[in-house]
Amino acid sequence: MKRAVLALAVLLVACERPAPQGDAEALALLDRTRTHHGSALLDGAEVRFSFRGTPFSLRVGDDFRYARTVADSLGRTVEEVVDNAGTHRFVDGAEVSLGPDEAARVHTAVNSVAYFALLPAPLADPAVRARLLTPDRVGGEDYDRVEVTFAREGGGADFDDRYVYWLRRLDGQIGHYAYTYEPTPGDTSRTETGTRFRVPIRTRRVEGVLFQDWRNLTADSLGDLRDFGDRYDGGTTFEVSAVVLDSVRVVR
Picture 1: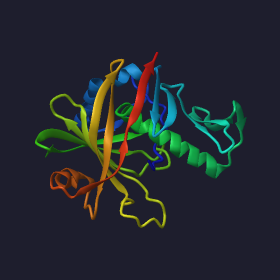
Picture 2: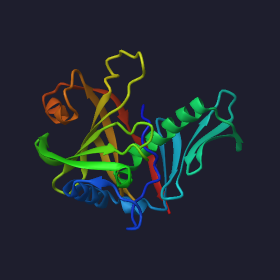
Picture 3: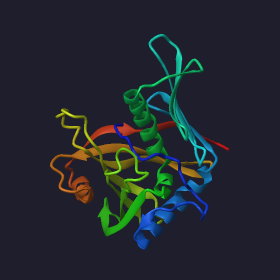
Picture 4: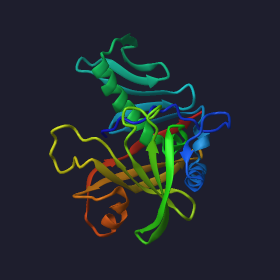
């Protein structure tokens, strides 16, 4: 998963905190979605799961801490962490220094997994800018659509990325979402189109919080993210990966 997204000090509740900006209707739809998904229950909790064989631990809230644990070539335990203080690496419990490029790589690897795992909670971030789009119908089901962009200040390295969320009219659940990202320079492979469209594989609640697994799709010569629904129904998207969270736990 190649994403460097906005910093994830997830701001879930409390009226005195800065709020996302945008169309009143779009913001109301995002509020409804976070309520349906149980996002408020994450505040102060720790989410643990395995992603592609790597354990992650996400402490959510103002005092956030996102970590993944891997083993290096010498068999040592390496914990890579993004928190309020920055980006860190610990080898067998001792912190080691990171150069700017390596710190950026670690931040991207940890933060991107955290962002997608915790959706829609990050959509309460004050850098979010929401705009109402026209409704859509995908797979025979009706959806409201909201476009999300990010303010430059607080929006992270990829503040200019763009998302479109298909929110189920029945209850506000995320039915699909699409986003842009910056492909690896020089990569001309068919999978590196710079856009993705996610289709749910599995949805389940853990301690009242809804978690989703996804098929990760793209399409050739896509005109706009909003076209993904039609392209998916028309059978002209193709799968590039799966995004699956294993052994999810929520600890309070």
